[in-house]
Length: 293
Ligand code: GLU
Image (cartoon, rainbow, N blue to C red; front, side, top):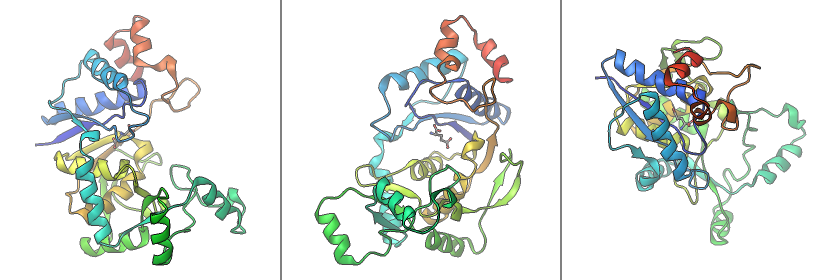
């Protein structure tokens, strides 16, 4: 049986883009005679708020969605994510990085390459310049001892090599939707575009990448549907799936809802918020019409 999910983060009010993504997964699950799950991705405890979570339930119910109970809330499962992190640590594929944003900027400034020419990852963040990678053990111990804050970074080159070894060859994924460039079918991954990504933090033993792959596996998700903005993230997720022994789901990345000026909707686009539209007297049928579903 097919298992699909909608996995919002309760760090703002839902807007039309979320309505599209939620209805897309819900309708697809219905068409496939599959199961539909709702998952609350609230690992960022500083930005997530109970009122946003409640609004997710209210707004989705108002839209006519139904999901299985109990809903999985990621903030209740940090110990599980930590076990996966430990596994990656034992495989020697992650390392602690103490760099502040400022240190990263300084390292780039000193590299001799103009900052605007420094490569950025698909999310627009500058690639990690490698400071704190392979630092001597004594330095590492001293920084830990000083209580400095750090992030766990995945050594992408090593991780990819190990994942390829496990896979027995080049790693691919199956895309049933399309990338923003229209790529679909069985596609190669390009995780090096992200460099050594942050996979966990000192105080939060996980990240979006780690918890989303762990939970999709744990919940038996067979078809991951989400916006095209997350298409490249799949490169990282495939690596983690292979390293942690998770099964491979299929993917369907859908187009993004844009405002009248062609910009992607964001949480700050208040006028497109589901609550505001509902208060203004719009019906669920109006919402479906607005997003073309
Ligand atoms: N929680 C993520 C977000 O709010 C989506 C996760 C996913 O669908 O992979 O953007």
